[in-house]
Length: 258
Image (cartoon, rainbow, N blue to C red; front, side, top):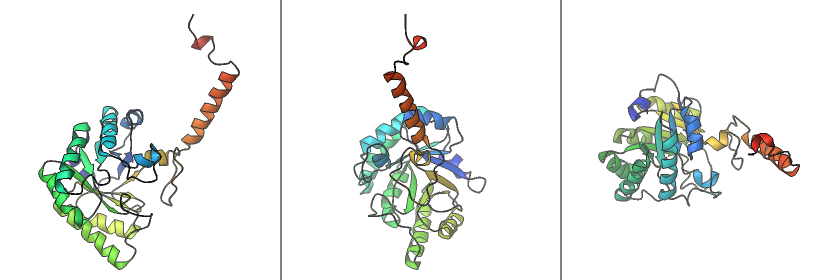
């Protein structure tokens, strides 16, 4: 199992590969591949539970799915998202982060810049590794919008990144920002950055597994590339099953007991 230090040591050597994962079956698959970081993300709300946003995701849900993923993924770093309103103050942040660690996470991720420094510092002081998240913040944003295109936003994101790094976060996710800004932030930090919709100059990339596999098509932003079409594979497989059942082809003798 990789440690936070192992992932940090990859900065400047090669790109870091990260994906979300929510269950044991997919975790086992990712465990056989060169995936450095797995995030049990609050995108579970939309992808698995059909919600419109992440607000309905609870600490209990993330912890339960983290425990499932931890049983199958052991080669890299396992990170759990801190759900919406689970880290409103340092004490709540620690109480809820500890549940993620008990479930099997090695680090927790929370959204926000300098306003989150008290929570981040308190978690780190209590031995919990923290991953930051800047740019587009899905838990509080009303709509998807690229961040940092204006001078004020540009300077704020740079200052937030430096402050988070100084406080001791292990790495930072940069979401939906211009390539040049994300690249500049990445070069200014000694810790890794993981991009999503932030261009090629970050230290690594993350996507939602079901998005990139073509299983979940309710979300199609510009940055998303479909690396597979598993939805069509599932449809074709189920169609074949329907045909064989209705035409009494399955189960045949090879799939029956005497």
